Image 1 (cartoon, rainbow, N blue to C red):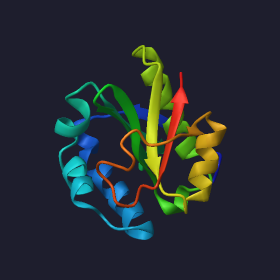
Image 2 (image 1 turned 180 degrees about the vertical axis):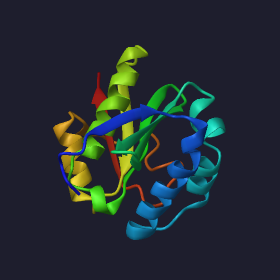
Image 3 (image 1 turned 90 degrees about the vertical axis):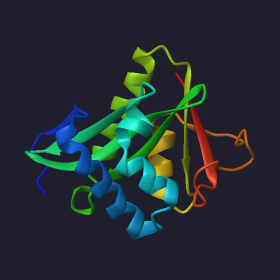
Image 4 (image 1 turned 90 degrees about the horizontal axis):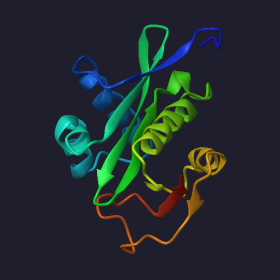
Length: 158
């Protein structure tokens, strides 16, 4: 993939719904497996993400959708979640652009903090999160409420 092609971040549109699931399933199956809650959220993004004021972002590489990320309301905080970039486009800072769009959206909504859950074996992702200003923290519930794979909790003060 050439870096001369412009990457554009766009908001959710129902025409992109299938890409939200496709990209995340591709990523999950490469590193873990699709958990029941993953399937629910990915199959019904309007219900689980958008209904409570969340947002979904997509990255267009030329005219192709190659990445996605979501900002999901979880009780009183937003979670940066469901971030996936297709393998052929990894290394082009697309994940960073998606995360920055989600962070900016949270700031614009007046949020003071967002969190994410990830897995400690995903060193490149954790490195990106540190670069964006996230820091490790104790999980307020002791462990993830939704994902068995999540063993790392990080927060970002906005």
